[in-house]
Length: 395
Ligand code: GLV
Ligand code: MN
Ligand code: MN
Image 1 (cartoon, protein in one colour):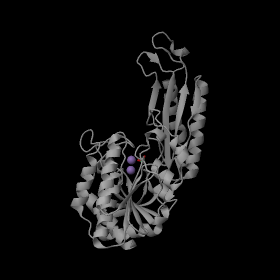
Image 2: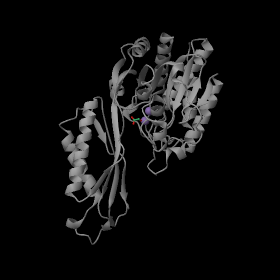
Image 3: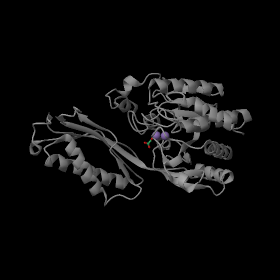
Image 4: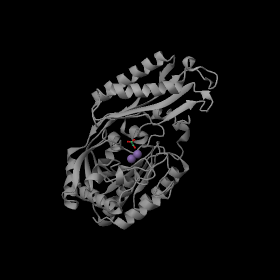
């Protein structure tokens, strides 16, 4: 099987045209947006053109199916609200190229998927979470985005029936690293050994909205001040529990009513934490909840927690990993490493259904979830070749 690097890069650039945004190579293609749906339509045409049968599942994940049992390759083609051109798109287009090359060579068939809402407009890797059984479909339909729109309403263009996982012998996902390790070490490829676990919820402090000129500081019940105190206390208390690899993020904050001259009465914010150890994730949850309670009590706030979403840490399949490693050693001898993934991927959910493996290529400067995300084209093509080599070994 011979993959065509130019054809692969041309498709990758064509996909970037949907939702192209910001400076450089940025994209804004959140799940079910006009740009996302147009990109999925284009992708379905490219899959059909490669001789694959297109099926869109009830979440809107797009499958390009080959006949009989096959490996499944892919990732996602939705993006963060401000995203790069490679996060997810790379794995989908690499899968498409390998499937096309396999057909041309008469090699064993390969199928492709672009999962929907990996970037979590509604949940956490929502499309593959439902397909993999980590989230019930009826529960997913009730999830809302940050503007209060329900997934049930946003889910245009979705299909009627689910794709049977029994069709597939395993799942391989190629992705950019989204961190600095390979770039700093000047290495070409990472073979993933495990993906970290995640917890994610919304927290609300509710105090008293009031006039910013007349309300004495001592009498305020300012929801932003509560959030600020919570953040500082939390950073301090987590120190005894975390490792250098543990991460936690308050990435979205909404103050009500969000005005210069009003003491904010309400702060709604996201609280997300990730680690490879489920026990540590649980201890962090305890500290987060307890700290929020203490701050609320000390500052006269009412406090509420939204539903906690999460995914467990997942190990990659040894057989698929061995095929990726052998291929990496052939194509990038001495320039690859085994490494964990701190980013989430659809592979976490697919692992409930079949063996999964993952492959990384370097991210320049370790930047991702930003318009500036980029990888040298030579590294993209080398990664494609490692993927194709692993598929050939598994055939
Ligand atoms: C997926 O993009 C993640 O947040 O790790
Ligand atoms: Mn991704
Ligand atoms: Mn992402």
